[in-house]
Image 1 (cartoon, rainbow, N blue to C red):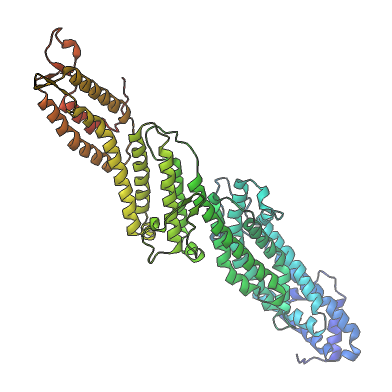
Image 2 (cartoon, rainbow, N blue to C red; image 1 turned 45 degrees about the horizontal axis):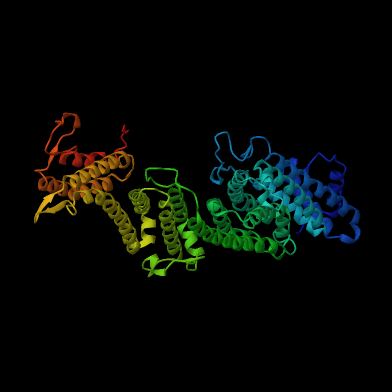
Length: 561
């Protein structure tokens, strides 16, 4: 820091500016005056023995210059339109302002940075760098507080206990945290560190780093404290989506946190972020396990009387899609086989399908589907009619299959082997419905017990045949009234059911009518019967039965009996 001016000239310059009023700044008098004063300070530092008073005057002036220029520049950035403001967590439409939309404040100009560094350099030479750092920390910390207040960071305070908030409120805070954390660590804190380094780098051991840490550590700790409070709040499994969002964000920020806070003085921030990430990981694993148990144990009743998709099925498949949406994140997180023991019930490992080449996360998802089907099977018992039980299982498992097939990622995770199991379960339930329904008709078409023996000859018992026809009419009406109200949402499956049942019932009915054609007559309206008749009246023709099965089953038609 050599100087070309004389000691006398330097002293005159120091005295001149010492006599000026505080609001008059060297900085405002142009580059020449700035250079003149800095040279004067450099000169008196060369003669410390007889320059004590001058040095003191210079340090006071430089401190005032540093503070005033810094405050003025900072104040210009926090005007009402200088920074993107978040007036609330959400605006009137419920939209959370995104990190990507945040407009960061401008850095101090090159001229200001250069001047502040030159002042800091002289104060360091004069042994007063500590004063300079204290001023800088105070001004920039207040500035950052104002910026973060506009970001509504104060709303993230949970007092260490996230459980005391209603979920809707906490969820909103998490959404705000996700955006605010990215703004802070990726933009604001990074910007502050850059400014500190430009002004203080090279002055003493870690002067710039010390400044930076002191300015942002309270804000950084507040952000991490919120994440920690959520991580230990033991939220129920249905809130995994929000927790995953928080975890994913913090995990992605850890490298930046480590880079920003690399000094020994910031070790607590680094370790705090690492511990919170670990706690969130444990919490997500716990949530997944809790969800598996909750699906198995869910006890809601069936309010629907048509065998439709149960709300549990829809909820579980939506939850699975949520998990698939975080596939990469969770695949790295879930590193163990799912527990197969559910109290008195142990799921055989073979129920998960082929395990080879599948991730642990995929096996967890498969287990959820397995226990969902067990639960649905139990719920089906709430239906009085056995065919409706089978229809309910068929509809719900088919819905599961469709949801899996609708997601390529989920389809790959579940695997071909288990998909075959699911489709087999649909086929099994469909066949069971067909059998339980068709058997009611087919039992009416059997001729066993219809014949009586008289004088060594076999004859048809009209009484027993009449009973068969009556039973057939009752079954016909039962199917017409009940099954037309039941539902099969998959139209392809509906058609397959109808065609299969027509193929089974119509030929059997034709054969029955043909076999007993000499004893029966088809009349749809009994009032046309003669008072004395030799033949029993059949109300429903073959065409009636075919129409019933082909058109009326699952037709949603309003039935008036």
